[in-house]
Amino acid sequence: MRIDASNRKVSLDIRDPDFYNDPYPYYQRLRNSCPVFLWEEHELWTFARHEDVVALFRDRRLGRKIDPQDIPACRRPSNASSATKPFFDIDQLSMLAQEPPTHTRLRGLVQKAFVARSVEQLRPRIEQICHGLVDRMIDAGQCDLLEAFATPLPVTVIAEMLGVPVEMTDKLLAWSHAMVKMYEMQRTEQMELNAVAASREFVAYLRQLVMDRRRNPSNDLISRLVEVEEAGEKLTEDELIANCILLLNAGHEATVNLIGNGMCALLKHEDQLRRWRSDRDLTETAVEELLRYDTPLHQFNRWVLKPFEFRGQQFEVGQEIALLLGSANRDEDVFDSPDELELGRKKNPHVSLGGGIHYCLGAPLARLELSIAFNVLIERLPNLELVDEPKYCNTFHFHGLESLIVRC
Ligand code: HEM
Image 1 (spheres, rainbow, N blue to C red):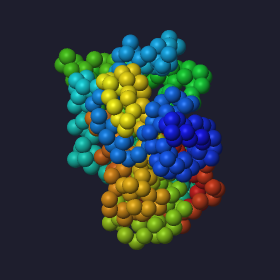
Image 2 (image 1 turned 60 degrees about the horizontal axis):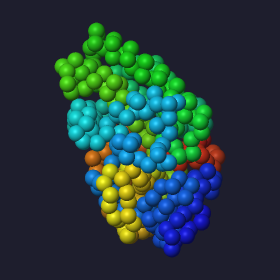
Image 3 (image 1 turned 135 degrees about the vertical axis):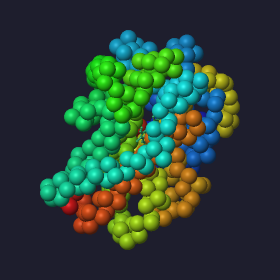
């Protein structure tokens, strides 16, 4: 990494294994010497401090949706090209790609299903899924915890909530893995083509499912959204499909990685794991600490919608900025001993679930899944241990392990 603090410029290659396996020392240097910088490789103004990330998440002069005409031609992203158009045509209809009033309308239609009171009803089913997966881990003796536990749990939960048949989970995972590559900064043309192909198949599948639910409504979220759509004016069929794709993808990608990163951190901090085993009342703060300590999502971007000045830097309409969540969560101005895993941490305003109007809709569900998952793993697998030193995937937006080989 090369830091030119006087000109606020940084060169940092996200494909460097030293960086993606442990980005935190890099972030620390950035926060201390150049917390607001132009990331040369990506031509992105980037913010590394907690205070700035929180402020900019909430700043309405920034947003996730911009009129492409407002972006200078030289900076227009690849969603303007014809090859990736089918992907972005559907992606831009999701609430995550919208601003008010459309964002408010779309989020409002599904919000009720994701509030804490509603998701709490899923507790017995989530426990049942976790126990079933652990039974199989015990039978296997040694396994990849990501494959055997972390991956199947959240996709099963979100598919059941929406009403997607359970035999589709392998397909959902394949589509989702291909599609989320589009959000990575170092994507290749082949990754883009795969993402487009996956989004086409996903849309075609959901269109069929929506047609089926029109004829045979059931007690699931897709059927309820079909009802809203048929009542007219509140939701189009394409919006319904785009937001189901968002829920299915967002509903598992980050949770999988957090179970992996979190379990890995616990297995490397035996004192903390022992403490949690002997004091289950620690669950609430422990889950927040695992969310903070090694967050699965390291960067989110925003468009500048109105010109503004921030930290002595002028920003113009059409510029894109990046917020470093992984760095904000280790900010020494906010967290005591930020590089330590402290399951009982009291003051923990981490930003892993975002902030402002796009704050994670699935936060109560994620917290419920994580607390049940870790408790079942801790309770049922008292001798769980790492077999290999795990490595992280060569990705940046998603920060997660390639595998987590454990002995039960
Ligand atoms: C550990 C797990 C999770 C993490 C770390 C996480 C993180 C995030 C973050 C950081 C955002 C904000 C993105 C931005 O502002 O640009 C977000 C948004 C969102 N998340 Fe999550 N998420 C998790 C689990 C879930 C789950 C289980 C769901 C289930 C439905 C979900 C659904 C969503 C949706 C729909 C949005 C968009 C909200 C909006 O645009 O208003 N997430 N998530």
